Amino acid sequence: MTDQADPDQTDMGPVFDGVKIGRPATGALLAEGYRTMEDLPENLDVLLPIHGVGPKAVRLLAEARGTRP
Figure 1 (cartoon, rainbow, N blue to C red):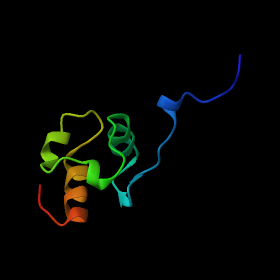
Figure 2 (cartoon, rainbow, N blue to C red):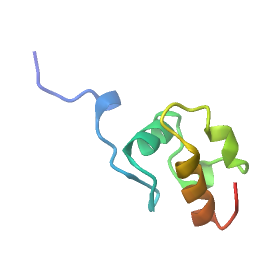
Figure 3 (cartoon, rainbow, N blue to C red):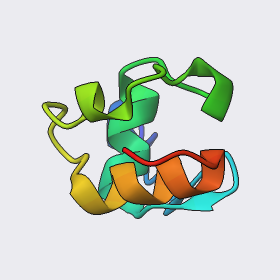
């Protein structure tokens, strides 16, 4: 048996494409296939049902994008 980390359990850090949104939100967005700010939907509120993404993360992403949620 090897001691390799499970890629699904690897800590992705608190920063998503330069925006500090927290570890849970970053990991959740990456797990859903979002890699950059450009990958995110226009309406960021649709991210709220994703486990780990909360209102604060959506607000921070909107501020970084220059829009309001």
